[in-house]
Length: 350
Image 1 (cartoon, rainbow, N blue to C red):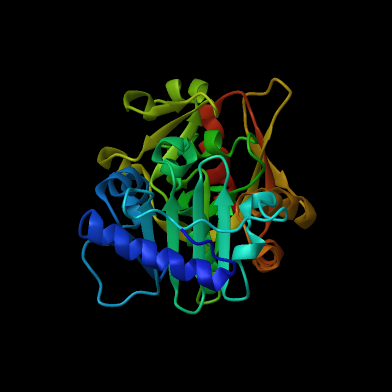
Image 2: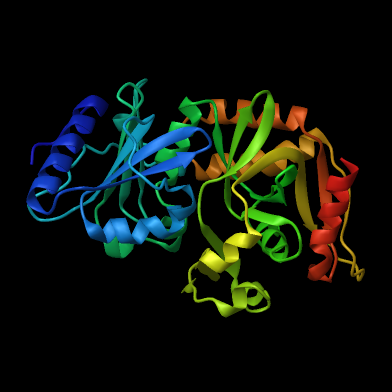
């Protein structure tokens, strides 16, 4: 196949590959997702990716087809007769976060994950994205737990919203965003609130957007990733099946129907909370005020490291949130069953 040299040429070639895939293999499958007030149409070239990705997107899935949408993502894999086009890679490609400069311009954004051989490309003008899987067997746990992450983040950005690396728990009247680097205790803190009064929203990725001048946190994925030790000691999750990744040391759960009563899809953001392991012996968890600088250091770097492109736009939005919302450190005590109570106390004060 002839190589393509520009972002526009490659994006056009992806469209041709998509047309071949749907003609050769099967009529496309489609469904519609809602993230905040943004509607996204998903189109799949075959059932394998459809069945692999939808469990993590079930909470955002709309019950019926829509006549209009804000953006669409075409999801396909490399198959005989519908091979994906080969770009001309340069030594400057494959920079951190997977961004591909030679396949990006002012209109098109592209990223390539070397580990999984997944290429994502999105066109601002057409509001169309392509998620291309070259080898399904190379997909990692995070692709199934947070599928289409790159393109969804770009779509949200174009609508003034942001996908952030963080967890969230709260009530319909308001809740907290749990921020921090990987391993800081976000997932453990969020899942320890299951069945403890507070509603669980997410443990890994959240949607941040403004509604009538107020910052809101929204759910994106229907998955939970938890270290094995915490998973077997969680009174809610210990009864459910999960897949384990030796690479991450985490179990991946999908939220079942009988867990839904412990969850919510969104709430006004009352505070940014930074979990912090307590090296002392106290059993009780408690919250103390944190500075704006500590809050942005906890929220921004982990998000920017994991999501490619548009870093300045992302940082500006997260900085705005930190300026407008109070921040606290959550000092985690040894009794994890009481973590929820400390967050409830904070929300009552706010």
